[in-house]
Length: 108
Image (cartoon, rainbow, N blue to C red):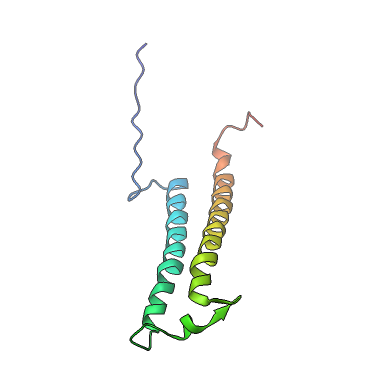
């Protein structure tokens, strides 16, 4: 009953080469896409504010009979999250398929 225990550590800041490094790159790209759209639009509204009340062309523009900034925040950002989830899953599936040649395929 002497089994050698192999320690397996994962460090997101120093991933191993191959699958793990590519997976971390995909995760960082998705997080960057989320952050740019979420916070970038809010920064754009603030940057384009041309009055003391913060009104700008972005806040005056109407889309589907709603102020554009409201529509963007309430409708587009949840949709963007779903799009990012789909993109993430497609890339991870492709990555897994590319690296699956190392695995045992006896279950197929």
